[in-house]
Length: 200
Image (cartoon, rainbow, N blue to C red; front, side, top):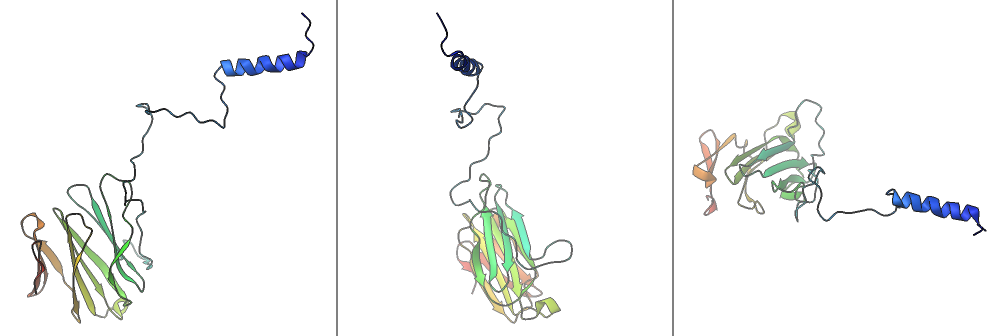
């Protein structure tokens, strides 16, 4: 048998040899139904937790950052708060299993300048926050707006208490299991209860 097209036949043999040795079209990606134990797997992003953690847009030249705060809960969830210039106080939280955060949500809106420091504490499944705003806070003037905020359970809603022309709450403590939260400054107190929110 004579070979009429020796070059074409040689090319076909070479292609067959490559395919037989495990050659693969680079445009085709092989997917396994189950990854091997040696391959790293990524935690899937749960619904509603597809955002990155956002930071404050207020510059801070020193060490630390008083315009951002993060706290961890016992069950692995985390809550973060930050200030946005001319907008107010924002909150995000993570589920503990998902790799992302919730969409940044404005929980107190104001154009007043943010005072340094967001005080954020977790008590069981309850989170409490203190945030202050003032016309000239960066110059050392006292706050004009003092916010106490509490969220419990799924963290989707926050109870807020606003006091104007008040120097701001200094500390926060909790009763058993975080069902009662108390904000204090000197002899002044403000109580939040899971059953009824802030006291009048």
